[in-house]
Length: 196
Ligand code: ZN
Image (cartoon, rainbow, N blue to C red; front, side, top):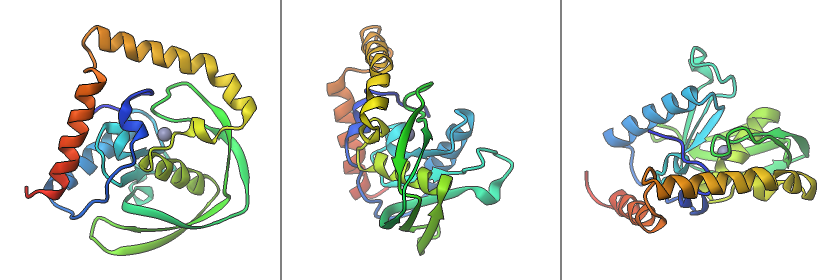
């Protein structure tokens, strides 16, 4: 499992609700958690590994030994936001790019856990930032869309470099062409509604 980088098309498509928790999903969640730790991230949305599912994993400690901090949520929705915080934010799909992003200080999230139980979580500060960042991903929204004008301007060079790198990797055949990536996404979406 690999984290896809901007401008991979998986990052701009809203993901689909997960209809059931089965063995395949458990395996994918385990791989996502491993991938998140390897990349030294605090959170990972399923479409960042090209899975078009409403699914995220996070551990704001970033420490694989702190299992009690590990969280996996399915079909998460932000139902309430309070306050404002501005801080530096990064993204595993934009390695090395950090910019100030304004977020709500507190969010209330409704989701399902891996046992299929409905849960409601209130998170503050860094945890709230992580939730907002990952849930944005699931809706096809990247953090560059949430930057203010100064941060956006300061990111222009990095974004051009990411775009160039991605297109070059496609030319070398290391990443399939966009049309093939699109077909793969559609096949995975259809697989959600079929039987395993
Ligand atoms: Zn991200």
